[in-house]
Image 1 (spheres, rainbow, N blue to C red):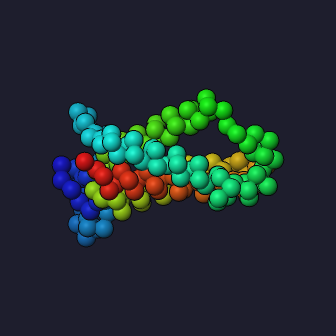
Image 2 (image 1 turned 60 degrees about the vertical axis):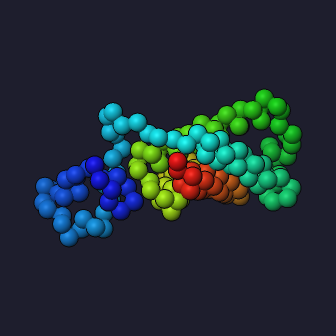
Length: 173
């Protein structure tokens, strides 16, 4: 295996296109990521995972506080206004959920061979767009979720995902 661009590449994979035609002219402009590599052990910096998860939890807590978007959120979402103080069990569940999300992003960065924080941020934006943003669009379309509520929650996920990826991308080892 060798590094091309920002992602790990398998020798010969990007030398041919899907029609088995040489792509030498395009080689420097494409990156072929290896998603599955049997026997490959993804190295993860667990200290970075802990820091990133903690930072994301704190950032999200501030995001929904009265200091940032908490008042706006409660004004557009009556369900949120009803239960202002989460229980200790919900807080613990949210911390565990954030750690798991951070571990998943760390594994993806390792599997893709992301070499720097810029690549990590690109992955974060794609993850946010492909999952959070599109799920909230579905909630607006099918569940009649107010777009303001979706925008606030999706914005939290964008910031949270980018913060996690940035910390993991900077502190790789």
